Image (cartoon, rainbow, N blue to C red; front, side):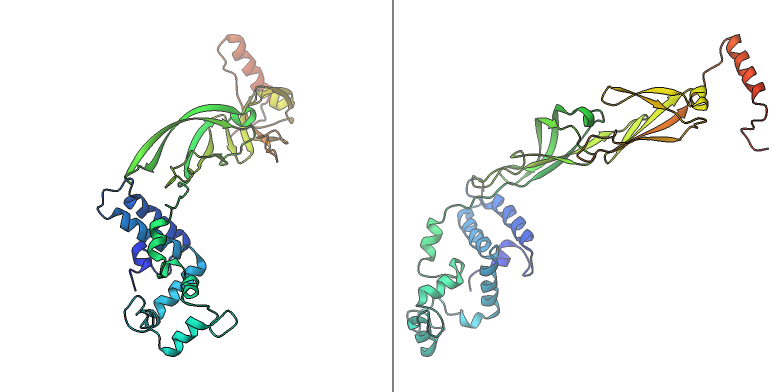
Length: 325
């Protein structure tokens, strides 16, 4: 048998289709005649194309594996002995394959059917012609992934932003390099934390004229001390005065989209207590909730009047013990 296709592609016999595809693409970048500096690049590329064409097709691969496991029936193909130059068959075998019809023993109408059954990867009278005339196989470029961090307000309003990404890729010679891309990215309203935006054709370049891959950008929302996102839910810290919390007053809360809502605090509300505003989180198809996390802020006592007010407050609450004895 000629060169082992698995060895040509540098993969084990039990390699998955994904492994075969990745190995072929890696070798194709190395031996493609348009970019390769190897002296035998064209020959190697033809061999790789034949190997990949066979192993990437489930039926052809099964037949090829059968050939590997039964080399005695194929060892003499292309030799000079026997009938028609195929010394691996005795007279009975020759008659069966050369004269049988579709309805007769063997199910082949001749050697052309035999070669057709096993595919172009196994030789045949037209093999060299097929290789010379075979067009270069086009392949889609690899998809690439990146992530960006934007302000949480964009989840409520949407925005188009200019971003510059540094994306690891391979150049035309198969060498790794970092490519800088500046793109206009439209971030739609309602995008949840961790969701991706697909930019068609912005991934790695195609091979042999194939289409470019796609670029997938994962969106992360920039957290700060006042708010953060958890999926479609948003947690926002809201300051309140002691009397607003104690008396259960209504306070105005400015939302991330710029609007304001009135929120009634429960009486005797305390710091850390959460108030849920239903469906006021990220406005997704299934909107999240907005959780207001209360932070009770005590005003400073600078003037004499302010200090007297605190003294009166202390006298009014003599039974209140903030610490355990």
